[in-house]
Length: 365
Ligand code: UD1
Ligand code: BG6
Ligand code: NA
Image 1 (tube, rainbow, N blue to C red):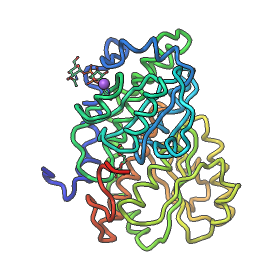
Image 2: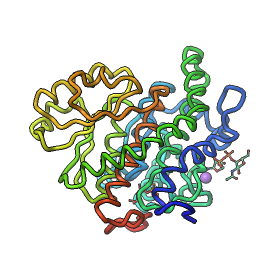
Image 3: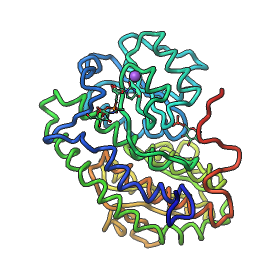
């Protein structure tokens, strides 16, 4: 089943050009988006007051990556809920809400309990799942199967990128009645078509990420700074590192740097800064300058050709990735971090596919 790969996680990382292709298959139609599972519900979704994303772990992070473009393309306010926290608070959910429940397995206990809660409160419940016939798929009013193919590694990789792409298609479909954003939608749709090719391109960083991993093997901690479209990338990159490489890692909002995290910066603590091209680029350039002036040990992820624009002094390690439509950039940017977590795990001698204490699907509370 693993073919020429040593581990399922490795296979699933390298499979992403294909899994993303199957996620989009038959759904990019005549320059528009066709999601059979949502077609009849788009009007209701457009009328909703709010979209509430609900998930756990990587699925929550995928929803967080989708939040900015769902807001932009639909104009509907989006709030984020970790399923267990929504339940703990019994947070308000209304009939006028669209609850979007995201779960690779479709069987995560907290997500299903949050679904029951959203159903009881009268929200329209939309599922985003990789598992046809799962409890989530059956109990939601409608939804999208992400069709990424079976994922075996406990640490989710290809499901994450397919979830983001499925939600991008969802946002495009919901917003498709808006004339003012037509050109923007066209650009994103064309970005989706070329995404598998760009994913193949970024996968060529494998050797470079193995080399980076070997330089981090003895680190106690790793910070990841992101913002905007790539806040989620920072959280998800850090989650990969902690769950499989068993290294402390935190994803942080770069805009919050001065409100605490800056105190941690010294010449030893490795910090990854995501600074690919988007509307936040110049803000990230200044974050890098401030970290360098405190002698931070930086690894900067930037768009191809931007090495000197992000680090004039040449004192950072730079990871250059292909540039895609800004809102799809999280799909590209997570891949070097998945590779890094993978190699770090192997080099540190831990179990890649069955990390200590974790389960693929948490079906009890
Ligand atoms: C469907 C078929 C697909 C076929 C395609 C051809 C299934 C599972 N999918 O895909 O094999 O190639 O038509 O037109 O038979 N749903 C939920 N909750 C979820 C996910 C999905 O209720 O979490 C519902 C959808 O609203 C829809 C159904 O399940 O009614 C199938 O969803 P999906 O597979 O995404 O639909 P299509 O892409 O149209
Ligand atoms: C578990 C897995 O914690 O459940 C994670 O180890 C996963 O990889 C999380 O992200 C949520 O799972 P699901 O199936 O609801 O997406
Ligand atoms: Na259903």
